[in-house]
Structure formats: C-alpha cells, structure tokens
Image (cartoon, rainbow, N blue to C red; front, side, top):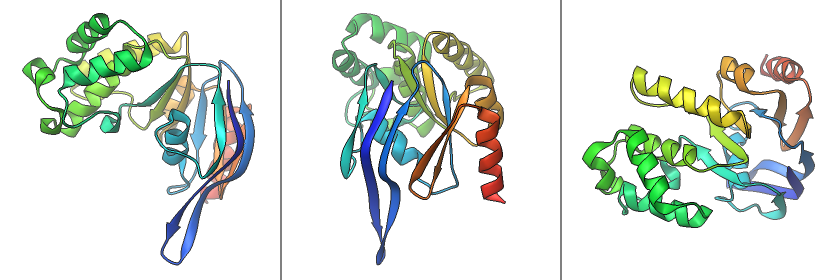
Length: 217
C-alpha cells in the first residue's frame, strides 16, 4: 500500500512555478501493478522519485507499508566515487540483506567483469544502468519503481533481464513510467494519470490509456 497525504510539489520556472502535484491525497491499492501515464513534463519521474524517497515533497507525505525500490534501471541511485562492489555492499546494508549474497548475485548477473571493482564514475550510462538494475533484482522489494528502462545491454542480456524481472513481478507490485504501451499491458493491471497537478486512478488500464490518448490529441 502506498498513500499520498496532502502531497505538494512544484518547481520554480522562470517567473512562475511548475506544479507537479497539488495537495494530493490518494491511496494506491496493495498488490497491483500500475501504469503512471501523463504528458511529457507532467512530472511522472518526479513523482516516482518522491515515492522512492530520493526527492522530498514541498509538504505532505508518502506512507507505505512495504519495501519500495529505487527507480529500476536508473544509475542515479549509485555513488560515483565508490566502486560497483562498494555501491552494492552499501545498498545491502541500507536494505538489510546479506552483503556477500547480494554482491555475489550482482557481480554474476551484471557481467561487468573487472569494472565491478572500478569507480562508478568510470562507467558508461549503460553500465550504470546494468549495476542499478542488477542490485534491484537482488533485493526482494514489495513494489518496484520502473522509469522507462527494464533492461539494458545486448540482446542476450536484455532477455536475461526481462526473465528475472518477470520472475520478481510474480510476487511484487510495480509502478511503471514508460511510453511503451506494450510493456504497460504486459505488466500492469490498472493505471494512474498525472495531469496538471492532479493524479487520477483508473481500475481499468485500458480506460486510463484511452483518457491519456484523448488528452494528447
């Protein structure tokens, strides 16, 4: 369960403000995977970051009774000056999982070779995404946050990534931001629409997609 309580977030833009959410109060259902829809610039990634706890709201709060991932596939959750291995060990301590087990899993899964023990600042964006994705797959989250990327790398690695992600989603929920409607239909049961500072819940994913498309037209 994720609950937004009087949540407000906006940014200064020029002489005005860009409102992401305005006094949002909404409880998301437990155990359901949701598509987060909205026009470009609506604030979907910002909302995801607030759910992850990596960005603070201006006021209000987000309450959850489960373990929530950082946005899967994004390397922004990693410390640039630490090595890949050090980042993974740090995440293991933060989330209370076995350090050696997580490190061994990520090293094997990500296929980074000697780069695993090199500073993340030396990684390409794809390598950072691999590391963040692998670490998130090694920790048993109740809700996975997915911002556009579910797999990176060559075709073989993408197949492996999709397979393990599908396995994780058998026992977890997800909150998805992606322009790929096929991915949303594969994983999501219901939808959210972020429009002009308001967040609307649709129990029927196809209804959410239809309303989103109508707004885009």
